[in-house]
Length: 172
Image (cartoon, rainbow, N blue to C red; front, top):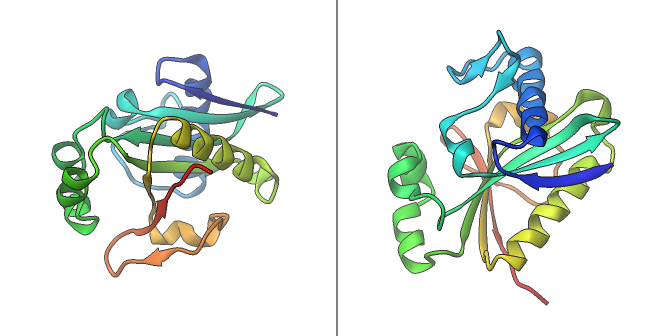
């Protein structure tokens, strides 16, 4: 298994977008205008600002996630307003500009759930965060996905539409 970090134009990212479709579009029947059933991909506007992480085994994506740094995208104006308010991103980015990442679109192929793929892709992301000076990570998923996710840390439950975890990162 190989863990790759790339931008949205890379071939590995295309594998990730197809895995997202398989999990969110085909398996979970998630309704999002960015899901393209015709070409079997799930890509949105934020991907062009993201680091796409992909675990590849035997030429196929088996796990993926994306990370977006606040130094690459103005979260306060680019993310949905309810999310900016829920996570208090305006105040947070004012206080910690350049040190924040948001991680979303975590997907694992059904036949690799419970494998090391989720742990390895998360470890690569966290290592890169520390190397890149990221000190805080907001990691989010919709609550209906919680039963399908692999838990890595304790999670804070919001009363609105998403669940999120906040990680404070510190290099040893």
